[in-house]
Length: 460
Image (cartoon, rainbow, N blue to C red):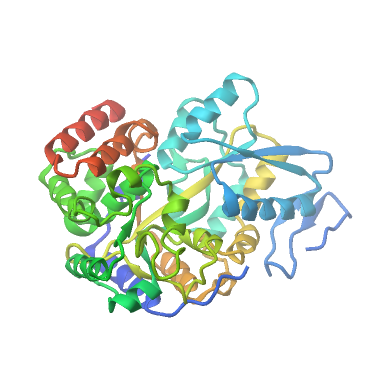
């Protein structure tokens, strides 16, 4: 489905959202910080001091559930704490099932084997649509829909719908328009936070002249490369073109794509601007791209790394202090306005049951999101999560900007695409941009590959 990108939004709104983010990110960060079960009756209140909110859940003693997601490391461990709270409140047993990308293929094997998980966390609207088309996904029940309507803007509800039926609960969101930097490297080099693309290139040269490679790129995972492209494209080509390309209403051979790739090549194609060069970047996964920016004292492998708010988890794992060692600025404006790109993960029911519906309802509540918000490295589109739950000033401001923007956000373009094009390792957009990282001078051939793969995936 493409409901998010089909809504009309103005440059004025995008400019306002970017201004809020810019103001937020000018603040200093602080370091990330890290209910009683009622056995009477068939229903129990989820009210407790941990979340300060209430969601009514059924007693589920003896019930068991499986939840599949691609999350690993701290992100997985933090989500397990949310599942543990659900277990505490309901008496159900929940098992986390590690999945692999692309999760649709992983689920396909589980369905074929007659053992699908009860709930899957799907990272693309296109994946939700595929799950519905394959008749795997089950619509949300009245309680979950009611919780969604109480806690989410219409836009976040709509991107979880297929054919006007609610299938997804967008439990996790992301601000994908951030660049994190090693504060000591910037200080040693005399570099300053850029606000425009030209200033970013100037800052990169200043860092390079000081003896440190400017950028770390996690090219082993194609989704990081699509995020680079999307921020440049949204800012340079504008919201209307972004929406058209997201729906494949214009071709990837369009001049606007050429312009964006040309701009991207100013970083990827600049000799010694990417840690390890193209070959090294293509062997660097996302977590490593972050940690290598914040280890090695004042001589890390790179000074800057682009990615979303969730990079904080990996920064902390690198034993760097957010706000002191690691600071952040908004992705610079390439065109008239700075880009604001969001992503997210939705809970989708694959095996319908009272327990699965109850867990979907819980994940739609502020109770669940508040638990994970306090742990850091997480952002919720739930508008009723108290902003104070987030563990540092910048994340509080980023969360506030996301909520205040209402429906005026651009969802990750590749996540809106059919998974064959926008979400499969070694194929489609991921592969084309990995090849482009390897050879950033080959713009025309990259466009031709992107268009051929897009046409096949979209069926047009």
